[in-house]
Image 1: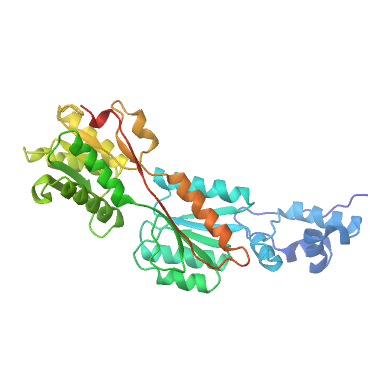
Image 2: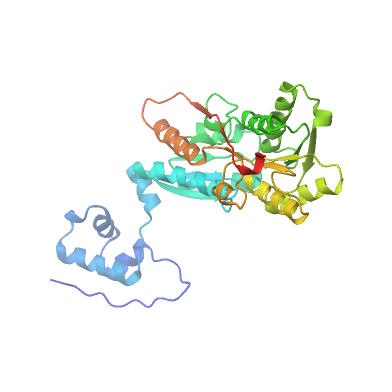
Length: 348
């Protein structure tokens, strides 16, 4: 037996239909609609058909988050990365999503643009939504707000950052060691002066890259004051690489090797070198960082330091899922060691 419900006019841009609208259209109580959505076996077939017809006519979408909160079965995890548009963040998110999928969890993704205020807004929205937990690359060094979030009941795992607090788990990479690998490799190729295209002061990436470069030079017995030429660029992308390399070349006494703190900056630097008629690596060697997919596909394949980006996402998601298990109280700190991948851009 089938039932019909009188058509309800819909206007583009109108508010989403509510459960009350469905009950009114079907001529039943709110409780009956709730039973159809959650316990359909309790509702007689004719009544259930009327409610389902009203749901279809109104294009009603149940509030899944509210239902999950009532049932105690939250399935959503929030993640905040520096920039969704950056290939690194995309790869990181893919690792998170792959691991969550194995546990029937879903991902809500947001960008902080490395702005603490923007990060705080996303965290507030995630908490209001009642997510299972949050994976976050902190926009600043302070994690007190994340500690408070955790103590209010929302689990937190730091993405690509070492946790400064024993209560918060983290997954990170030893980027100081990675930068040291890159510069040591250039020194082993016979270069005694190395340029470094780095980001603006105050960022973790800049600090770790510089610390690693200094370590490599000192271990080789070189004075960083004369062996390292550092160029600061406002953006660590291809445009920043063009700017940095151009500044080096304008001096007329540029080093014979360039280390860039990410691969897209290295790509821009290589573009600028070629525009000035220089050969890579015969005239200037170049090493990047991160080993993005594009690194091996360039006309001159780029030597780079590989970071296990997708694996970082997978492990961080795994730590979060484990932390939600009953009886799990201890935070865990996981740190990866990067790997130098040598290609044509640095070997004469």
